[in-house]
Length: 130
Image (spheres, rainbow, N blue to C red):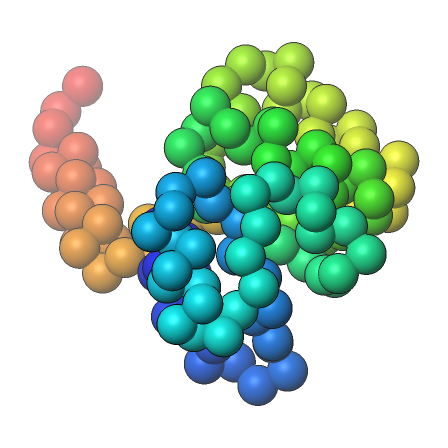
């Protein structure tokens, strides 16, 4: 998912992709090929970035985003925001407390295939008598 975000964000003027965080050594090689700084922990981004995209497995969303939000760094977190409700609430509270924007990625709702499926489902439901 991170590569998908990278391809999209690099098309926007005014958005500079300056770092990649991953635990995978292959990601380090990829980042080096792109001329992007590489780190193994999101806490290392504090003081280096204004915003971050958290595109890790869902179980790591909280541990990845919380240090950034606590530092006032804006975060786009892929869905789900967290596995447990209390963890999601921690992220929301941290963002509010530190003035950081917390957005949740729901990109699939803009996927043309998903939109067509939704429309087809709505049409089918209209034909069903209750």
